[in-house]
Image (cartoon, rainbow, N blue to C red; front, side, top):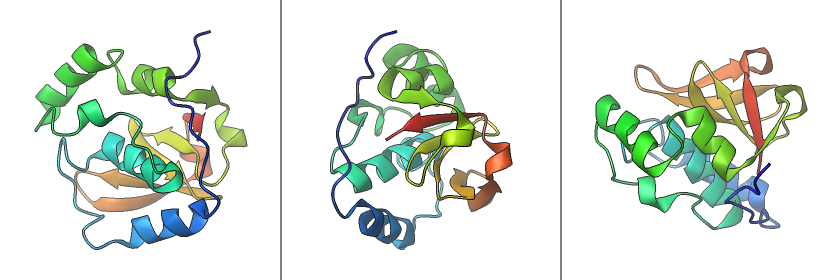
Length: 138
């Protein structure tokens, strides 16, 4: 198995940084290529590590069709495979606070008993750990 492309440690105050990032005004607004579910996950990683894991995706698309095209051209074809390229996969049952998770084909951040996700239709949403289908170590 190939080494993940992103391998930066969390900053000592990562929990404070993650909480502050989640509470920033406008965090609940979904916009393709600016703040969608994938870039929401990347933003959480940047808050915790100080490094954006995939800056080439920012602004590279502006709707669902161009997002799919960006995943094919800049990633591994799907959201799941692209996140596998950047981060080390782990079993969802072992996701810790701050790890990235997937549920209902969306990327979110594990907050312990649940995950926070950014959904196009409703903005920020919490889903229970039982909904996680994949997880990645940050």
